[in-house]
Length: 168
Image 1: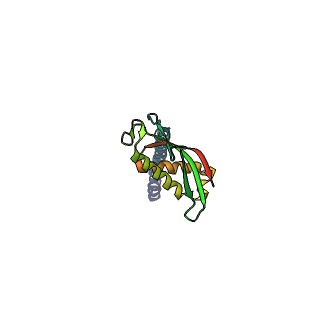
Image 2: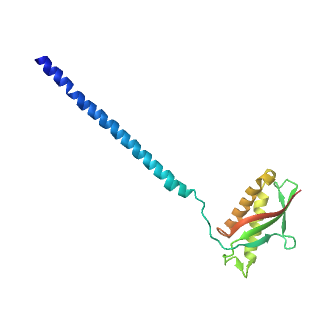
Image 3: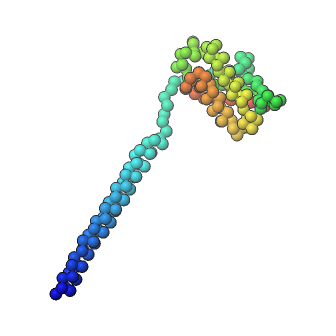
């Protein structure tokens, strides 16, 4: 009789162990399903909205030639002080027409012209010969745009166009 009680006592905890294991497995499965649902929501709702292109509403720009008033070019020594290379470049800047501090009657003020020319000349002088290759033209445009925007203020320049390029 004692043996039967011992055997009955040993068999009773087994269903409780099975229940706790089943409960743990079910909770893990529910947690995984919840994590998958949250991941799906984040990727479909939040991440895709951040990758949508944003349309920037801006007015038409004013096109300004940088450099000599006759031919609209700049001649600068490039490649360092010891270099004997010269660059003759034509640059046109598409600038923010809403900028009333740097434009009067649709023309760039003299102070702004000086700042633009200084920023462009400084940027071109800093370039090394390897940076003036045709494959790096977009990098050159970006550095000119950034330097002029730094001199005049953010969003002063929309685009930079290179109209002529002679490296000697």
